[in-house]
Length: 365
Image 1 (tube, rainbow, N blue to C red):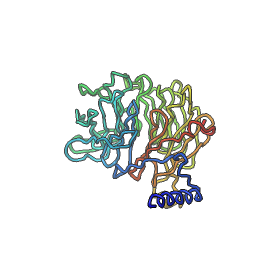
Image 2: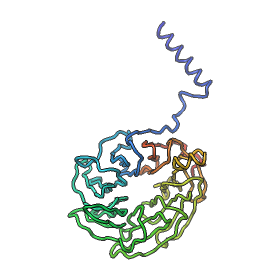
Image 3: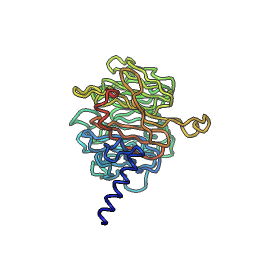
Image 4: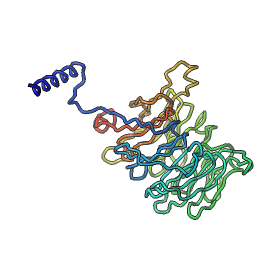
C-alpha cells in the first residue's frame, strides 16, 4: 500500500504542476550554469582552440580553467607568493600547451597548461592586454599594451604597445612615442602582419608589425571603445563602445559594413563562429554591457545587464538573456557556436547552452 500511496502522490504532484503550466516531461528550457569563482569583477573569458576548456580572469587576481561540458573548475594559474593584483587578460596557445597572463603589477607571466609557472617578463606599466600570435605551430610571440605608470624602481613607464618573444624572452617591438594615447586592447591582425589597437578616444589604429609604423587611424565611435573581436580568419572585426553602438568592419579596406544601435553602454561584442557555416549558418552577434551602478542610481533606470543577440545582416535584435545583477563585462561564444559564456561586474560567470530551438526555429535563422 505504501507503493500505491507514493504512486498516487507522484501523480497528484504532476497534475498540480501541469495545472501551473509546468510540464515535468517537457524538454528542459535553457538553464545556465552560474559559477561564483571570482570575488571581484571579471575582465576576460577565453576559450582554447578545441573549445573543451575556457579560462576566466578577474580583478581579484585569479585565473581559472573551466571544463566547458561540465563547468567544473579544473585548476588555477597563480604565480608563487602573494597575489599581484588584478589580471586584465589571459590567452592560451592553439595546441593548449602554454598560458599567458597580463598582470596589473607590470608582469607578463607564462605557465604551462598544467598550471606550473614557466617564465616571467618584467614588462612595466599597468598591463591591460596580452595575446599570442596566430600562426599555428609557431606561436612564440605575444603582443601587449600597458598604461603609463610611475614607480621608484622603473621611473616613468610610458603608454606602450609591444611585441615580446616567448622563448628565449626578448623585446621585439615597442611603440610608445608614436602612441597618441593609452590603448585599451591590442590584438594581432590577419596573418600576424599588423597589430589592431582600440582607444578610449573612440579610435582604432592599425600598426605595422615589422617597424611599428601607423598604417591607418579610424574614428570608429563617439565614445570610448571597450572591446573588439574578430572572425576566425581575422578578416572581419566587431567593435563596441560606451556610446551604445557596435560596428562591423572589413579588415582588408577598413570599411564599416554595419552599425547596431542599442540602449546601453556596451562592454563586449563577439561574432558567432557559425557565421559562415555551410549547413547551419548563424549570422549573429552577441553583445552586452549595462550602466555602472553609480549611473543607474542617478538615472533610476534598470541598468540593462542582459546579453543581447543581434542579427549581423538585418541589424535587428533577435533576443536577450537575463542573469547578471551588474554590468556584463566580457563574453565569449562556444567554439562550436552552441552556447556562450558571460562574465559580470558581480564576479559571476554564467554558462549558457542553447536549446534546440536556436538551431531549428525560423526566428533564429
